[in-house]
Image (tube, rainbow, N blue to C red):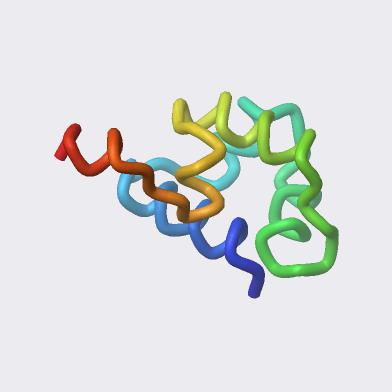
Length: 74
C-alpha cells in the first residue's frame, strides 16, 4: 500500500468518519476512492488536493511530512 493511501486511511480512522463520506466530499464514488486506497488507482497530486480538502488536512499530512513548525504546534 502506498504512503498516501495508508496515511489517508489513518486520518479517516482518527477522525471517526466513513470512507464513503470522504469519497463523496472529494467528488469520487465509493468504488473510485476504494480503488485509490487499495492501490488499484494511482493517487496523483490532484487527488491529494481533493482528499485534503475533504479531510480538512494539508498535503504534508498525507505524505507524512513534518516540518519544524508542525512540531511547535503539538
